[in-house]
Amino acid sequence: MSDEQPTTTTPTRYEPTRYRGVWYVVVALFVGTAIFTPIRIAYKNGDTPEGGAGTVVLDNFAFGPTTLPTEAGVAVAFENEDVADHTVTADNGSFDSGVLSPGQTYEIAVDATVTYHCEIHPNMTGTLEVSG
Image 1: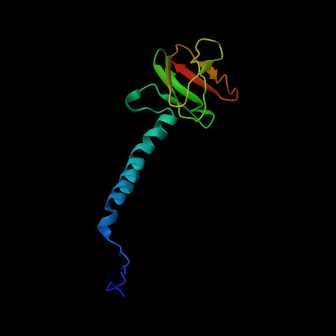
Image 2 (image 1 turned 45 degrees about the vertical axis):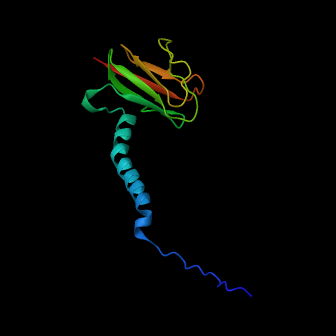
């Protein structure tokens, strides 16, 4: 016979401070989303702060916005936020981005209204509408 007593474990109880770090992360993600989502929506709609030219986002196999008003000679950025490769190719041949992988950006300034498409996905079309 041994003198050892059987060991028992008590269940751990919920400790509020134990998950404090997780709550900080959750709150930070929520606040970050609340702050930056309106900015992303504004850029997708072609509106930029301080009168900038605008950004066309390639996402979900589409250009957004489809038509972007801009001024002659002002640079417009095309950002590929999609999961696939795309191109930005002028219908009149005046510019071609080459293949843009996800995360890549292409910038162009035009002097006249131009329509464009994606060579890889021809159903993707858009227009830079130049005024002035």
